[in-house]
Length: 150
Image 1 (cartoon, rainbow, N blue to C red):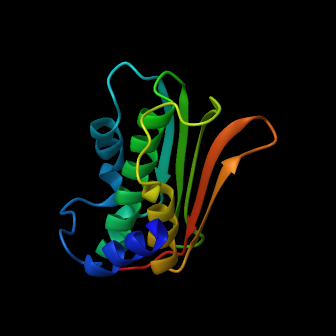
Image 2: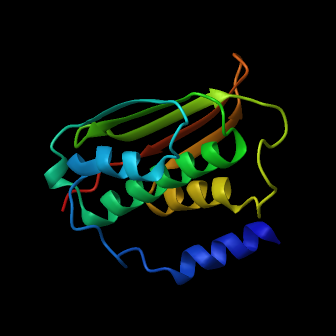
Image 3: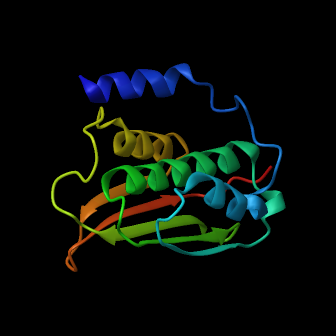
């Protein structure tokens, strides 16, 4: 039922609503504004030719990164988060985030729609999202989205 609600929410929200007026080159600002004070974050952000990205792609990447950081803050509040966002016209965008898995949820139970929403948004943009505990014991979210030029 939660998956159905998430899908309906996603479909209700037009892909071009509230488009950011800033290019992907401003992603560092979004990251800074989206993360909780006091939680350690290491990030590497490199987008080749960010001004040529379609606004729908830009908005999708912003929302995915915001949701990943919100989930980390909520469910692993004292864990160091590692975030990488890279890509460009030749290979699309890859978002990878990880933090030490704390077992269960580190924060209050939510609707479990955050990760499903990330996957749905990636799919609507023609991409994929995978998440879960990896071989090193870290919780990882990996998203790949094809490039869309403006």
